[in-house]
Length: 91
Image (tube, rainbow, N blue to C red; front, top):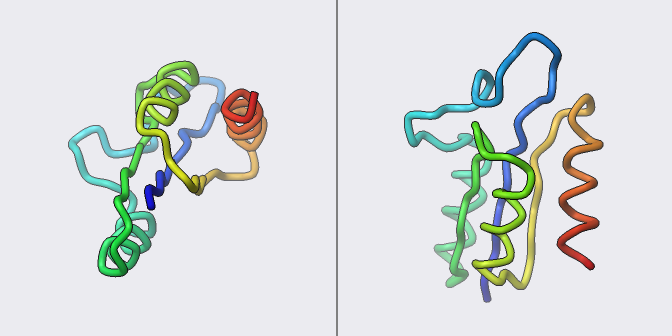
């Protein structure tokens, strides 16, 4: 079974994409922990950290991986972007 875990980047005026997520390859500790537990149970896991990726690039990465399950980490002020990606993925 394949699982994708996605950390969205907050869309805040005055900041650039990538200002709030690690662009050095480090993943969210929470998603890394969840991913490690799932891998231990035999799941294939991909963690996507939006960083400087556009919503379209995140969506393309999710679709290309073809997960059975998807989990999203998003702050309340970035919920609209997260919801748009989920809705597009379900189309």
